[in-house]
Image (tube, rainbow, N blue to C red; front, side, top):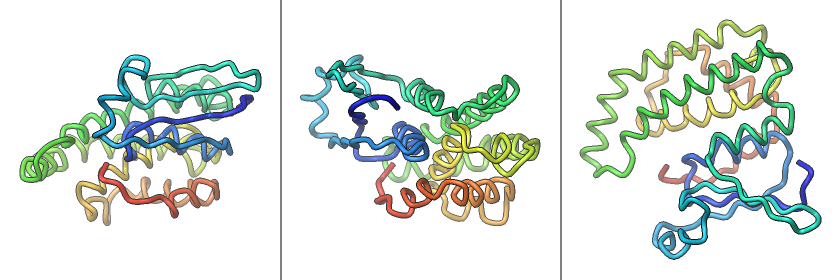
Length: 211
């Protein structure tokens, strides 16, 4: 990314910022990862465009600043800059299809956020026994159609990044949920980390967070 400095601003968690972090890492872009605590958010919020996180602040070599919002728009922007949105129209479609399928999974996961423990456990069981298996199977079918080991062939794209970020959310709810099931998802993760040593290193060193 042709710029002087990239800063990602988000809470101290993975959440909506994690695909951005991952795509920056996979693309080899150095960035500042600023994490704020929830108790500090009220005083910081008025300084954030739109009052929502994550935000990416890009400062070019002339000192001009660009503030970017909306997590998937940011991730797509970075991926496009680094040729990680496919080489053909067909590949672009498959990548966007996977992103859409992952967002369906994320919509289910988000139902569990900011809930008391007992309610979170109840909702988790409902979604893991409800829509999530169907949604994960649809993702497996998309992976089966690939000509390689990743979403489109063997080249890392944004689709691969958003997929493993979402799968981590599912295992947060139940560490055993994927065990013995969804072989395409397990195979995908293995090959993604083998293809991107930078991403593998990032994940191995990533600190555990609540979300």
